[in-house]
Image (tube, rainbow, N blue to C red; front, side, top):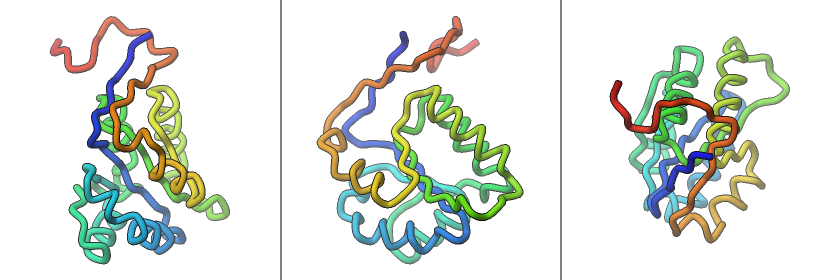
Length: 151
């Protein structure tokens, strides 16, 4: 079973549906000191808002419906994201629901840490693993190609 080592500095994706953006911004403000020590990325508007309102560097991809969810998924598959904080709105139908489902499938397949609400995000950010290396196991991954291998 392949493993991927997470370094001390985690690569964290921050995503929020429209009705949850303010909740994520509030959570980031509370945890800004911890988050500042990690590499942050996110989907379009969410990344921009966190950067502006929390004064944190966040690499922005396109918005979720415009391919941002797919880009984050590809980063997960490439081993470039360790943790995903995704405050999603379970009561609103999203036009890009298939992309969200694919993103969550990849998160499980590649064994990354996922928090989908504030309580889980609080437990993740306050875990002892946040400041240490950690090896995650990629289950069900059957491919002759190794991470970083050029074909």
